[in-house]
Length: 242
Image (cartoon, rainbow, N blue to C red; front, top):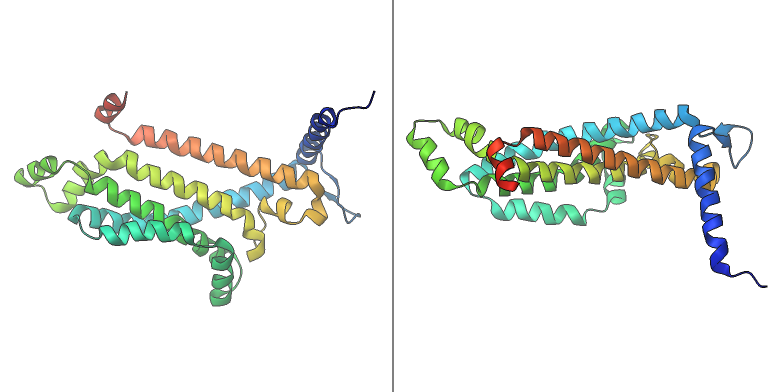
């Protein structure tokens, strides 16, 4: 009998996944020969650098975007700015942004963190503005009537009620940043993206291993931030959502 082509695909796919698994845990000879690549040591080093870059960029994005979103949302002004920033952020080409930053301040960690932070600012700014501006105005006016300062109103009334929306923006920014950090090798910082970009060195097994590891890191980061969001959400909102 003539074997059906469809029967050979699962075997080939399983073989490539097996190669990727071995690449992560045991390593293999580079496609260019002469050295061993992959293995847990290199994987952990590149994963740690990717996580470091992601957290630095996310922290910078939060520090820059969240105060602006809080201020605009509290005053209920600047909707056009907040929404436009969110829309513009989706249109930013990451490669072009990194190339621009490299031309302006050179390659390296600072260049990469600034570029990735710019990518994370729009969702944080937009969600912070929306979350704060949509807080029940009656609650805000009641707080003013009790003599609370504007800063206290933001901190004790608006911010706790807006946590789910704000954290939604932070989670979106985090996923955007950690996914885009795969092109960090183009800025001179080696991350898991090196496995994906340098196919001529790591081969197909390295490319697949890099893609799987980045996806797992993104899922782990999303789960961690979801847990933080749940811990920060007030009991009243948890009961309302349940």
